[in-house]
Figure 1 (cartoon, rainbow, N blue to C red):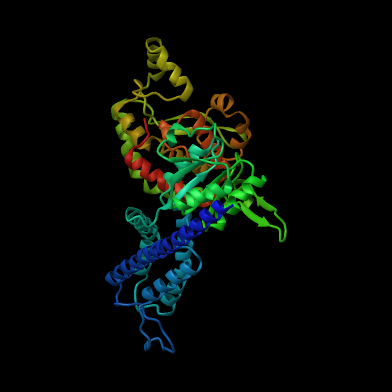
Figure 2: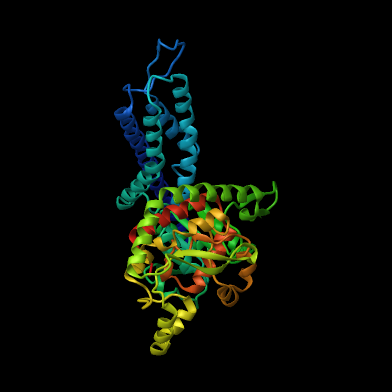
Length: 498
């Protein structure tokens, strides 16, 4: 009993020191992010000054149209208000994935821009609208990026990262640790792995993480607390057990915050809302299918129509150049179509620029006889590396994904969407999708999608099916914007294409 009292007192002393260190890191991280926001507003103000007809925006108080009385740099005022409100709302201390945080930042910036635009309307003629719009566009693009740069710098300075322990090991532990390691915005640095079953060993991919073998909740809290752990992540298999509750309680007693990752598979996660009942240990998660909601479908379709029509007009000179290049490389049709499965299982002709020679079928037959092993790969993925049927211009079109530009017409006609699951043939749907088939046909296939920004041709077929399923279950308009941005980067770098 005396021993327990001694180590508990030591642990409490250590937890107090850890709490002080955590508070220092907390305030430094807040100041770092706030400074990044302030710097971005400063750049936006300088950009406005460079383009405006007057050096500052003018705020009018008790004015006449020709007698402004209270000049004020509104970018400085709005920037200070933005930083203050984001701090009060907990934005600087909240750990979020980059694009989830960027969504909240984008909404906040759009709201902050409203007073600026109202003042432009009231003071029309004193300055041009173009510098204002350009400055706010700069903020929308670069403020999330500058924040991420601040996180990277603070990571190097050992300010942003949180020493973290993973408690519990199951089939998904390695996947969870990989996801955390790749998510700089969260800042969870997993250094300890608590293994409660003495017969269980950590996966090879987690060999660099220090294992701690113990099933005693108090002992777990003692060890990781004295080691300097600042956060614990519990990979829960059974959240109803008394053991699980005691582990969480012991960690909280020594000032170690706890994040819980429940075992959830194949459920919609985006847009999940939580409710708990007053006076009861009941947590209710409400899930819904966003992509099936009528307002969501209307917004998605309107965006497809407007954006595809715009791109068809803007890119028409590029279409002409590509068509001439294809004709010169190999006479024949400029485009070709292939049947794909559309929404509600209705087939449609999916358009592409022709990248193969006109006698492609004959060449494939000869190649199949010469390379039976590689033909098996083709049957699995319907793709070939160093495909002998592809022309030189076709290789370039495929590498840059420009061969898919004619699908903008499919989008405009309603056969496809800008973002969605991959367009597949009926055989692929029958052979690989299984129970996910009914989910697949609920929505239109996309020109790009989660698969294309997750490795593209380097991704296994099983992973492709999973990504299609995940996208449909977790669709949101913001995720479509994120995927389009990532697609532009992937196309520019040519990663994963062949």
